[in-house]
Image 1 (tube, rainbow, N blue to C red):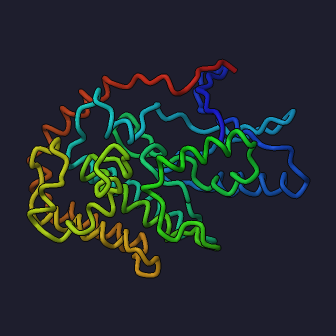
Image 2: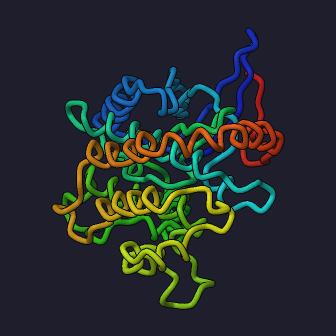
Length: 304
């Protein structure tokens, strides 16, 4: 939707400022913008990046967010400079994102994210997820043409997250979020990107490639990210595959609500507590090592 800056205020506070590149808005569209911002401001959850303020002046539309260090789940999974995320961390990240979506889908009226992907999930100092851009997707039609062009280009690379019903009237819904979350679960499990044109044709779409393997024990284990080092039980892996299946059903009416998916993921933790305890020491060591590799040039710094 625009550019993001790391801004340091005179009192020492640090925030992330998103400059939303809007077209010249009519009075109705300006009111719509304020409605969206107000709704986003009221989203309060431990796993959602918090909107703390906004500024509209001289044609600029600025959104001020709490600052979360500039490390995305996409980078943590796919950048060769990072150690592989452990099984326990991947489950906790999945649960955190599921909790955020369940919260958004449960309020009245429900809020759909409509652009859930690994690049929109920030990881804090404890490697816990913070979902960004919540509630802002409805602003895209009001953005400038260059933003729309970038969005259309990004849509190609993000196509793996898009539900089959995308483009049909009225399908930008919580059910599309559920599908995207299922793709995210597959990405966490396999370490593969949702869509990769460099792979053989039958393997380019992660969902199409993985769906027929989810309930075959041997095939399921073969598609697990090698970086996980067999740090999971067969039962835990099977339950995880069941959670994925609840999400990636081709027909949206057969996809489970996020509350059911969250319960399925929570059961993996509660029923494998002993296994989690065994890797706690490694988890702590991993966290302290992982936080040493945080540099990223994506966010510009500015003093305000």
